[in-house]
Length: 115
Image (cartoon, rainbow, N blue to C red; front, side):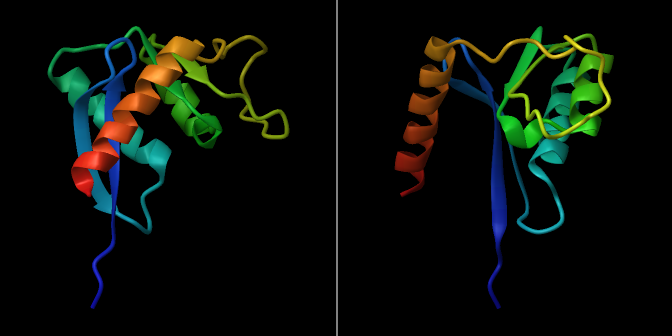
């Protein structure tokens, strides 16, 4: 029997630090659902991010609506072919390149620790 899990991390873009992490079953839990659970954990700690950045896999109505409902700016890559039922301009522009490169370095560090 093979046990398969997916790892999820909530990161601070400015410093590239992992501030929350979770393991979920690799089947049945979507990345946006796991991200919402990580954000909910932060809210229970009374920590509310000003913005959330995500790639185009997170451009779903449920994820974007939940983030915006918490008065958090959603920096989600827009998928033009996907209609999530939001008003024009509801999504913020994607995160800046320095923040993405910082997150990329942190992901590389996570991979190095795992191996």
